[in-house]
Structures are given as C-alpha cells and as structure tokens.
Length: 399
Ligand SMILES: *Cc1c(COP(=O)(O)O)cnc(C)c1O
Image (tube, rainbow, N blue to C red; front, side):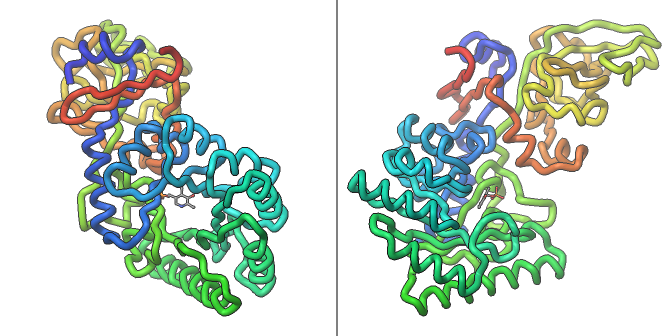
C-alpha cells in the first residue's frame, strides 16, 4: 500500500487500522468448511467487530459463509440495523425487559434468563403484532449469566415458552476453559458439555425443543468438534487469531485481519544521556535517532507496552522507547538508515518482509489479543483493503 496515497485520499489523521477483507473472507470460509454446511454459523461482531468495524465486517462475514450475527448489547444491534444489516441479530448479553419495545421494533433476538424480561418481550411482541425470537442462556460452569440447570430452571423456561409472541429459538451455554488444553480443563469443558446436553434432554422431556442449541465460541469450535450442536459462535478466529496459545487451528491458517499503522511525525538525533518521555524511563546511552509517532494509549495502544514492545519501520523491528503518552510515543530508529518524516510505522501487523504479530504485544503485557483489538477506538480511522485496493474508509470523528 502506498502510504502517501492512503494519507492524502483516505484518512485525515495519519493513523489508521488497516483491515484486510481478503483475510476476513478466508477466515470465515475456513470456519464454514470446518463446521460443514448444516451448522448455523453465528458470526460474533460485538465490540465493533473486535475493533474492526461492525457494519463492514458483518456484511463481509454474512456474504461469505455466516448465517447470522451476534452482538453484546441492544445498542450494537441497532447500529447494525441502521447500517443496513437486515439479517438475524442475536444479543449475547442481558437485555432488560424495559427495552422490549425497541428490541421488538428492530427485530433483534435477546438472550433471556429471567421470567420478568421474557414477560415484557412477550407483551411488546403482542402489541407490535410480531414474534420475538429468544435464546435461553444456561449456566453450566461459566458463572456469568443463565439459568442453573435444575428443575427450577426447567419450570421457568416452560413458563417462558408458553408466553404468547415469543418463539424459543435457542438454548445455549458458554465454556469457561475451552481455550485451555490441560487435562483438568478439558475435563471441565467435557463436564460442562454433559451438563448442557443432560439439561437439553430434560427440556425435551417436557416438550421444549429449541430450534438451535449451541455452546462453542472459537476455542470450543476448534478444540471440541463433537460439541458443535447445530450452531457455533466464532469470534476471535474470524479476525485471524487463535483463541489461545494452546488451541490451534489445523484445518486452515487464520489470517490476521487488522494491522495498526501510522506515519512518523518527527525525527531527531539526541545525545548520550538525554531522556525520552514522561517519567524519564528511557535515557539514551549513545547518540540516538528518535522518531515520534502519533499513536498513544488513547488510541488503544496500551500504555503498559512502554519500553516493552517493538514497531516496524522500513520492514525492520525497532524498539519503542520511553512511556507511551496519551496521543504519541517515541521509537528508536538509530539502526534503520534514512528514516524520514512521513514514513510508515506499523505497531502490529506486517510491513515488507517484517512481521510483528499482535500475539507478541498481548503476551508482553499478559493479556489476550481480543483486548488489544477491541480497544483500538473510534479516533482511529479504519481503512478497508481488498485485492490490494482501498475499497472503503471509515472516519468515526469527521466525515
Ligand atoms: C464473545 C463471545 C463469543 C465469541 O468468543 P471468541 O472467543 O472471540 O470466539 C461467543 N459466545 C459468547 C457467549 C460470547 O460472549
């Protein structure tokens, strides 16, 4: 990608998250092939599609193998509706019954685990002469949301299933450690699954048969192929990352979709002994060439990475030095000849022959890829690339 073209024509601020749509398409196709044609693929695009841009990515996933999408909350669902997504949208988190009218009007499917909420959804459905499809959450060991799998849970789900205007579309659970490969954790996932299927059997015995039953996010999808049921909910895998270091994708190679890029705004030589940035945590030990880049922790580049990460310049890795500030930080480009203002720097991703995987950044600060991706915020324009061409840009702040 010619950086100057990008800057002049596609972004106003020389910082951008580049989104490789070919990679996204390859990933969702890989997922589709892996689960087969019969399983419903619910593409998880919560948190602005893990920072990639929910509307764009929902369209791409739906166009290349996904059957429907899922978000975390009603606001995210409304954003998708307003962005032209007409397909089915599942909300994975809690939607309070007080928002039933809005939810019903937008034709969105809530996760339900309280009778009072279901009652309000039922009333709104009747008032609007519509049907609200609901998914019931069951807590089999995640300890987050859902009915406990016991007789009480069955009674309440029966009561909900009998409410007019509601269609019991799904029953699902979520694994706590399906991203771990230790024997103890694999046994825990196995136990969660058994608990889930036992509960489904008990529901069937009282005549409750949801259209979909589902439990696998990316990690379950990869590590527990026998647990797919008839729906899966891939998130991180679609964006090109393994769910963890121990759960591998062997049937296709996930291709990272996002890279974080910017242009150098300042270059200078500093003398031995000079300090760089807040806190004086970096001191030059010799004549050093320092470049400044316009990305900081307010963009989602974690401050914890200060002095602990690298950046690509001219395809080579250089150290980030000094504290990462809110909007800027510095890099040591002494070993790269002829670095100029305006040259591209890559905070994660690839550049020429160079590669700086996001996994390295996440590991350096003890977090997971998901967190860094979804923290890349709306101050950073998204630039969508397909077949080597920029096909679209999204500026959240100015248009
Ligand atoms: C976020 C989420 C997913 C997707 O998780 P990944 O690990 O990113 O694949 C699936 N199901 C539920 C309930 C979630 O909250």
